[in-house]
Image 1 (cartoon, rainbow over the protein chains, first blue to last red):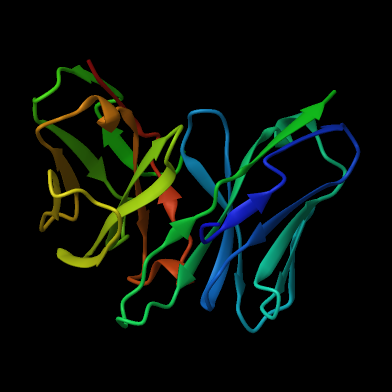
Image 2 (image 1 turned 60 degrees about the horizontal axis):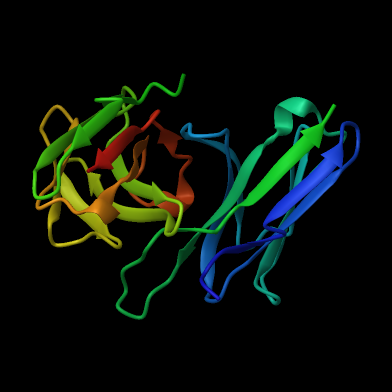
Amino acid sequence: SQQGEEDPQALSIQEGENATMNCSYKTSINNLQWYRQNSGRGLVHLILIRSNEREKHSGRLRVTLDTSKKSSSLLITASRAADTASYFCATDPLLTSGTYKYIFGTGTRLKVLA
Amino acid sequence: DSGVTQTPKHLITATGQRVTLRCSPRSGDLSVYWYQQSLDQGLQFLIQYYNGEERAKGNILERFSAQQFPDLHSELNLSSLELGDSALYFCASSSGGYPGNYEQYFGPGTRLTVT
């Protein structure tokens, strides 16, 4: 699997329910970020969590990071139809060359039904 | 509106041709990033410039090149185009030079279709 794989690939829920999506990565990172993309449009930054943080909140969003399991989760509470979008995690793995890459995951397509 | 502008919005061209995509970052941002998004490859980081200098390189093909000008706008040049280059190309900007530490602001993208 590649660095930054989201799970599930697609998720369909009713309005008002919570949505949880997960991101797994392979190598050590400094930070992990979550982005949202509405169909065919540019990405919008949601939240940044640093490797020494375990949990972060922003409005209806809750992000957790487990560096031992190399995974992160994004929870959207009380979902709304407007939350329908694709959600991506992005990581900055440290490379042995001392350089870095910035890698986006495969994304989770969330559909919230009214 | 993120404050990042990209032109053109759409571009249709033939195989073998060369095109230039343009990006103006948010006011005050020094970093510009280029991404390619396609159905089969997902969102791929191509290259980053910080204050005119190349900072990091991702999966950018040798047929592609970029630069950042003194006024901080950036151009992505794609040459010898192939059908597989058809994709959405996004530009993003951030205030700092290390992408993991800073929020990136994305432009609306340029949809490139190679026929």
